[in-house]
Length: 167
Image (cartoon, rainbow, N blue to C red; front, side):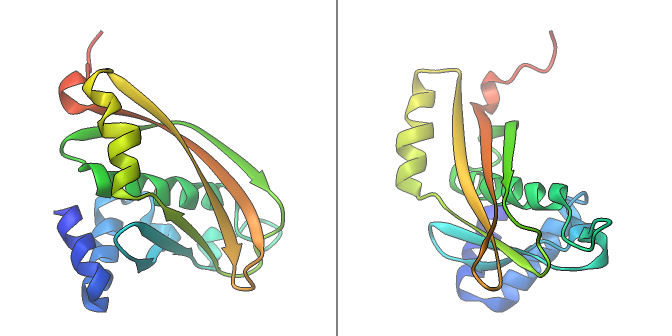
């Protein structure tokens, strides 16, 4: 369902609006942040994190954890979109942030990861390995196109049939 909504969102602002609402409902932790997909094409996503009270810290800038969440969210969503959440399990393994400036206005995070990259770097290796570890990098920019921070997100990816939930 998610893949279909995202595909329809490429050509339709209405479906993009619907997709954002569905994501807020399905991932309730992110809903208060009002993170939304602001641009989408076949190979990339751009998320926007608004400059609202719920995202601000005590010095009136966007909180470091909200910025980290946006980086995790964009990479995870693009991976889930390319892999299919019903076939592969994504687990956040590590997140590393480098903060350069305070975010004193709305910010965006862009991430591009093509289907070719997903095939070569994840799906093909999973034919012979139990799990694949991928480290992905993003940059958060403000409206002035200044880099606010950089995120390095490491994901563990497995086929669902290889997931063990009991020891």
